[in-house]
Length: 97
Image 1 (cartoon, rainbow, N blue to C red):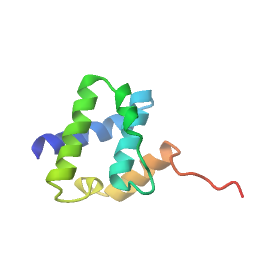
Image 2: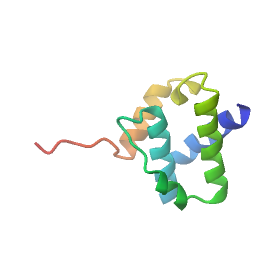
Image 3: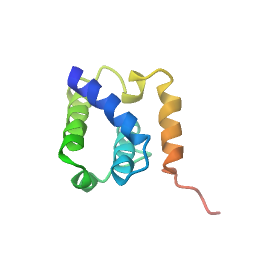
Image 4: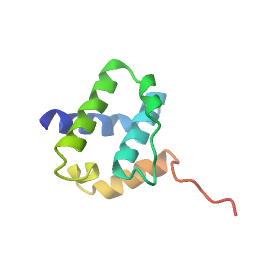
């Protein structure tokens, strides 16, 4: 579980960046946060380098097998942080009507 938590913190930090890999990581984290609101295309994992892919797998393993709490709850004010990340990456679909 420690590997998953460490991976979560690394990935969250990376998701604050502005690269293509950061975008994929942010969408992955949003999907773990609320998969109904933010479906994640698993083929996007193909675009990650090996280290980031392994971090995603460690986090997914922790979340699926040792789920103590939701991913955002590992951070102080995690809900606010996740919603800000979602906003920063413009993941919410805006209605045009």
